[in-house]
Length: 268
Image (spheres, rainbow, N blue to C red):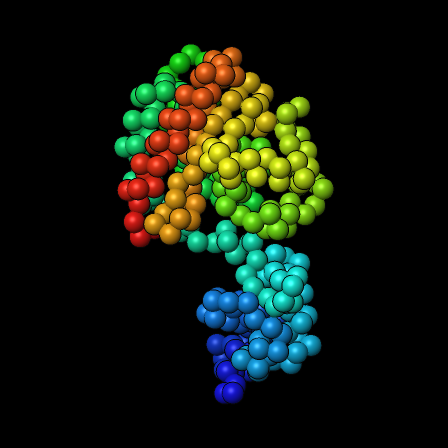
């Protein structure tokens, strides 16, 4: 097997004098896993990068702790972790996504008369990338660009439903991950997993005063041509305006709109 020189072993030159060796090795391992497109063993990584196994193990331990790499509990091999899943929605793709969604979200907004949102997954939470606020006197005011924890928002639950349960447990591995925003906020990982299992079945998610007191929200997924969830959309309204029938109507409307947007997407 031909040895692929480690970047840390390349000849020194003036441009390399500020290189951080440990960081260089970590990035080399990440690049290798990305390029190979599969899980790798310590032996494979060591051979392909020309690194000592002990060094590879130490670097991987750090990457696993920071969730950029994860180890398969059955095969003991290493693959990309949940943090790398957050890297991928660049500004160009995001602008394209907003452009595609805009006419459909405007139509939804005109039909339901309530606040309409679109969000993406970012830094273990959601970030709103599009928002149309209700013109009613009592309305939900949150600007595009605002961030919320994923576990207590309808759009967040939708996006989380496309992660595995193992990934979700890694994301919320600390007890401090669950901050109580209202009395209805999900309080622990087991409760969250149970909720996400329901979301996977019904393909819609609800936030019944979990993120904000007095706010009810219904969300649905936006899928690309590969079936990957690239965003989530939702309808938000004051809880006082939402009856059981209204909630059902919102769920149908947001699901229909999400399906239309998903059908119109290609190449994202």
